Image 1 (spheres, rainbow, N blue to C red):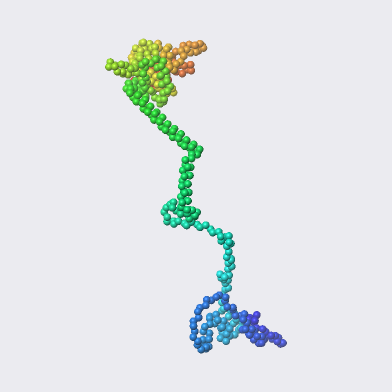
Image 2: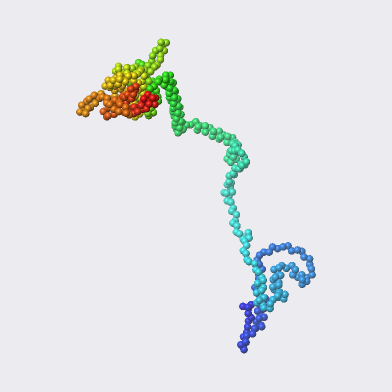
Length: 432
């Protein structure tokens, strides 16, 4: 390049010397070439108002007084007279280019550079149709929404008169009243079901009240003649009275059998049955007293031997023991052991039939070992180390037995479990 080296000319003698004419030509071209001068930056510098300057005589000092910094730099670069240089043209040009700092080129878009779409012109059809006006929003401070607000909205939006709005409101109320009077099948069925439920609830309440009243009456009637006033040989959880006046033996036995079947006493408990008779006093009143053993046997139709009744006391205990079955029991005090024991032996052939159906009945005959029918009799046995006489059915089960645990007590029972309970209660009362 022209800036980095000087043009040399070869002479005929082979020596290389610089060509003075070519060097001067390059210098003139460098100074005159306008491309070396950097262009003026495209950044717009805001113009400042120029102060008013009074005219002065133009001298060399004030000639460049109003020029800008950029103009001064350019002037100094073009002024070869005052510009410092090293004498080498290439180095001077490089120094000038180094000192000049050109700003970067930025692309700016003004508002005029952006393309805006042309405004749309409404058609005549759009100009003729106006959108409906929106109702004015209520103030959020209004604490209550009233009918007056609804009327104002309807009058404003639907363009209806107040009279028309009032008429429509009355028609609406009339229609609602007529709908309430019309009963649909579903509502009728619902009403019928409600009526049935209420009716049965009232009926159950009435029946429950009647049942409670009946129980109260029965308890009051039983408390008139309390059975607990009668002394007992052994302890019983419950006590019931049994009138035996003017009652046949069969009826009395059936009553005892029904009481035995319908008893729902707790398991292991004993219910005492006190036979009572009514006697008339000298003053004409009636007094109920417990029946004696002879009176009770007579009412039952029992044909007991006379010696047995003489050997037994008049006071006795009769009840129903609730175990595996509701089993009847007799506890009778003995006044004469010899008469009582001999009387029981003579009563054995008819004992079971006389006490049935209060006691379970078995046939008087049974099949013997040879296959022939024989008379069913009592046999000796031992229960809890006590001697007993027992009667068994065809299956070998005990259906009736009697025993003298002591010479002063006679026990007649049906279930073997009852014998254990009777002995334990006699021991508790120190009767055994």
